[in-house]
Length: 439
Image 1: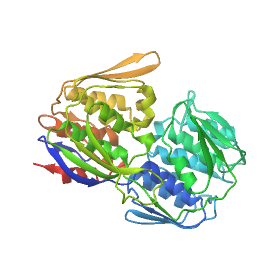
Image 2: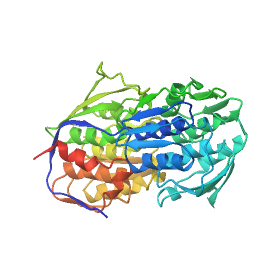
Image 3: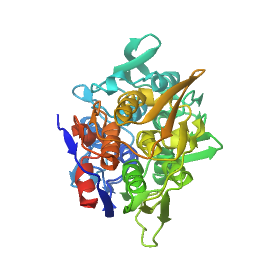
Image 4: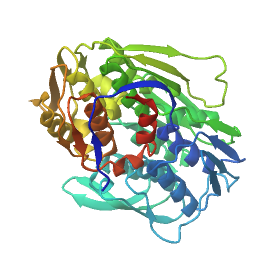
């Protein structure tokens, strides 16, 4: 337990560089481990989740070395991994578990995957079902019609499928596409709405024939994966979101975030904040020529008077990880902000609808959850201020960071019970925050 106390409102100002986007890092590691030729990965995010993927791949026979923020993945067997000597523990990284399942579906051995406390209660049938349809043997802990870790997967000769996803998920899509590398025939994934395309971009960079047609992604296997040699990972836009909201809601603030990811499937946070009249300038300097295969740029964010907005279900996949801190922004906006179809927040590392609602109510927020059929909408009537309170992280990194942002903008003293969970995605969050604070 590492409590965190915030006594006074502070004004953030300055320039920051953020750790690489862990969503991209997972895919860079996995695909590099399956390719021919060595790969250097720069601006690698050193956090619990990305290190879980790195450790799992080493356990599967990949040759990986790390020096600070740079990772070297050396030539392996090309598409083949080795049977691990014991079960693999993936911590609480959902991306590690789901993406690895796609790769392991095409191997010729059996692997047992163990998960941490929070990941062990997250739903996995959504990825297990399509992989079984492709030919993988999968057993998991059952509870009703849902499945949870631990998971035992036996690889097999796979067949390509055409699969219509019932729930929009970039991780599930990525798992199916990775399994498609080992399948006979093409694999087609049809999304209910477009999700982040990190897997597609990375596979293309390694020479895979993959195309998109509307909401469909089609992969044709056959070619060996060939490393491009070097990959640069842009700054994590999900991490940037906390500083974007902080700078927007505290008068006098100005924060410049360098080399942030500007993937179109991840820019929902920028679009929504701009709609709320946040002052955000996006700049793409000409010197950003690093081989990232992902768009990136600088974000200049200044304080502004926010207004309420409506976030529709179709927008959720592009900003689902940023919704907790957007709930904080909504507390400072004029009018009623409505987040429609927010139910996916219930099945993250914790129930984020519950964790954020309980904390923000303690700070004086007017927030309620309204059911509309099978959907859940969050309604926040902005009061323009919050008050200090004793808060809980619920062991969730995004709840913890969101409440730090709320406490910094609130009037009076706040105490968050435990911020050690922040290491899951952003161990340097507090240090980066302190570099911006001017008292």
